[in-house]
Structures are given as C-alpha cells and as structure tokens.
Length: 190
Image 1 (cartoon, rainbow, N blue to C red):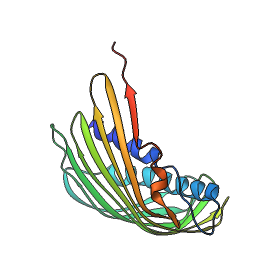
Image 2 (cartoon, one colour):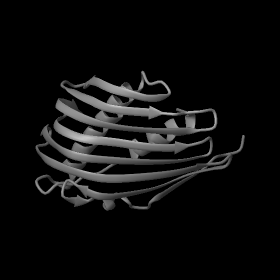
Image 3 (cartoon, rainbow, N blue to C red):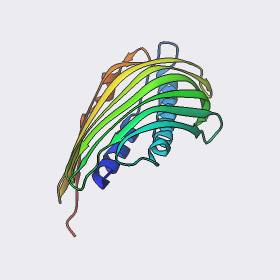
C-alpha cells in the first residue's frame, strides 16, 4: 500500500471513537469498542503483513497483547500500483477471550474494508457486522452493524478528512460519531 493509504487507514482506525449498548453505559460502550477496534487494527495489520499484490487467502491468528486471541479468516486483494491503491479485505474475526485495554472480547464479526487511493486522495469504506461480548473492566453484549466512509485530500499546503458513520452501534445510532464530519490540517511551507 502506498503512503497515503497507510496514513488514511491509521486516521480511520483511530477516529472510530465510540459505541453504545442498551446493557452498557455510554462510557463502557466506548471503552469496549475502542478495545475491539485496537485489536482489529493490530491483528488486521498482522494479517496483511504477508500480503502480495493480488488476491490472498488469509487465515491468521493474532495473539492479543494482554491474552487470548483473535482469528482473521478471509480474503485480501491489494492491487497497488505506482499510481495508487485499490485494496479490499473481508475477514470473519473470531475473538476468543482477547484482552485489549483491560477488556476481554469474545464473539465474532465480519470486518471489511475497501480502499481507493492515489498520492493525493483516498476513499476508504469500512463495515463492522457481528456480536461481541465484553468482560474484564466492563461487562455486556454489543451488536454491531456499522458502515464508515472516510475521504481524504492532500495537497502541499492542506490535508482534509471527511467522514461519515451510520448504522447500529450496540443499540445506538452510529451516526452519533459524525460530530463535525470534517477535519482540516494546514501544512506549513518549509
């Protein structure tokens, strides 16, 4: 993947900040989803590290930093070229007592991504569909059916990211994550 794509993926994964559930407080829901998203980012990077251009079948077990595991099974298609990236993945992720940020995660979800990027622009679409249970620092169940879209633009003097979330997030509207919907950064000239 090119540099723009990697930066965009990092922004997208870090931007996913909240989750709610009928059986969890908003604070616990946020903590649970942030722990889950950290595992998806770390384990997904490991699953993709051996990727070559073209379709790759993935069967990768991520040993969670604080114990347990998350198994990523699916396909990755990275058709990066000098002019840009067209990458997708579709994993079924099975969490088996995976502990992240003091939260134990059990359950399964389908975690998908589609990236179109070049040196100045990128569009990334994520989806998270499944059910996980939290234990440890928090306790409760969380159903997810979330779609997220990030669009970036990067020039010599300005970078911007616009984003949109929609769907069901642990019993709450995922659109609650659309606080401003745009982040702009001015890049100083050297």
